[in-house]
Amino acid sequence: MIKLLPLLLTLSFLTIACSTPENQTEATSSTTTTNSSQQQPQEGNVKINLVSPSSQETVKMGNAQLVVEVLDSQTQKPVAVKDLDIKVSMPMEGDEPMTSMAKVEPDSQPGRYKIKTNFGMQGKWDVVAQVKDSQHQGQASYSFNVQ
Image (cartoon, rainbow, N blue to C red; front, side):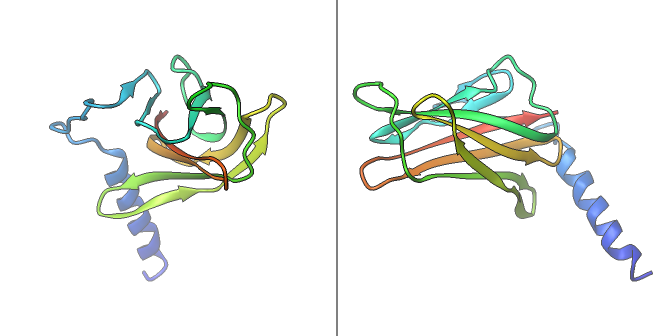
């Protein structure tokens, strides 16, 4: 019986997390909504744009690669930064968010970065990208509906 308790708790959390209340509505006041992701307003002296996946691509559950580019807010030119922090999480109703590791690697193009992560469940995942460089600061948030 003791061995079944963790399994039952896990299944309960998954059932709750995967169900969507019928009366739930989403606010779209200051966000740009696309088919598979939405971007929150940005702050700082650099902009972090999501290059891939595009708004037309379906984000699948499992291993995923995202590509972001960091641009100077004034010149719109790519900026290479030393510290790009990525946090990947899935909100869990009534519990702490589920998190996933994110490995950041520079891409072949200046100012572009590949992010390798894993979306372990279907549902809404949040990705927060933050530049913590001595000369450049900026933050952007993205939400993905993983299927």
